[in-house]
Image (cartoon, rainbow, N blue to C red):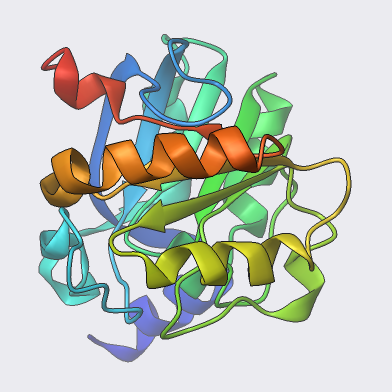
Length: 209
């Protein structure tokens, strides 16, 4: 990457854009809502079960003007979901400012492993064991969504729930490839611990992109 593009990237004036598309939010508190998704490239969290590993290498995705990313969202729903990858690897200040100037409701899906930048209407924190969230995001998150791959993840979920704000909604979501094994265990767990709710990747069940 040349020096000019590096400087623009550091300022958030351009971002590595993997894809942007209009669809239905499939997970968590806002599932079922029409949403415009902005998927930012780059992630070093490295979940072995990640279903979007193509997003990891930021350099594999074109640097796109933040103004153009916003412009392309304008004809769609007023709900915009910024996801990744790990979008907080990059400065989200300009992106969120310009989306808000166009009356968008802006959500982010993040592991929380990086400093929170940008101005968000909804923060979905999905923490990972290998790169735990920075402290500041716990009190700001509106939703805690923990992926359940095996039994050890329940303890991790409880540890994370102790740190989250009391306003946050708590979700356990089965890892897609392991869902048939873990779902009965999750159901029993949530019946015993009703502060949690189940989140499903409904877009996959419905074959929605």
